[in-house]
Image 1: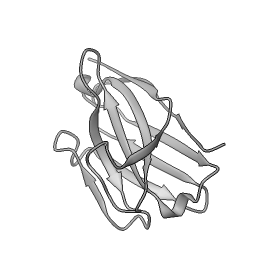
Image 2 (image 1 turned 30 degrees about the vertical axis):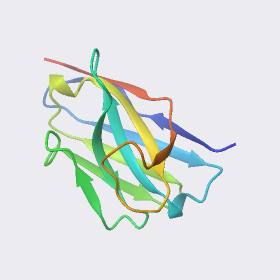
Image 3 (image 1 turned 180 degrees about the horizontal axis):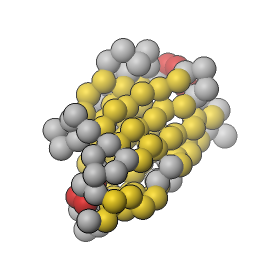
Image 4 (image 1 turned 90 degrees about the vertical axis):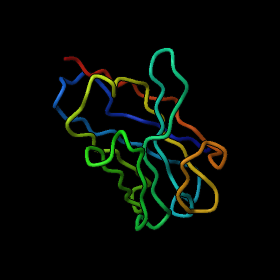
Amino acid sequence: QVQLVESGGGLAQAGGSLRLSCKASGQSFSAYGMGWFRRAPGLEREFVATISFSGRTTDYADSVKGRFTISRDNAKNMVYLQMNNLKTEDTAVYYCASARGGGIAKTESPYTLWGQGTQVTVSS
């Protein structure tokens, strides 16, 4: 069964760091573009970062540029989100998703498979 499973969420202080991981199983991982999205309390889910199938192309939401880094290891079927200099407004449930086509995508429509999410809470 194809699935994505996130891990690495938790509690961090403002200015701290967390690293999220997403494990993909049951699919040709290296053929898919991948993305991270998040949903803060009371808000709609929003784009955070995306990476192409090769890992050579990435893009970020303006709110996380310079603080977050997306990467992938196709040999391990893993995608990561390194989050540095965390802010309280980064508090959200973070979702990993895969997109057919292999390219980057900043909107939800190309993403066909989603993980269950992992909670990130940043305290001041």
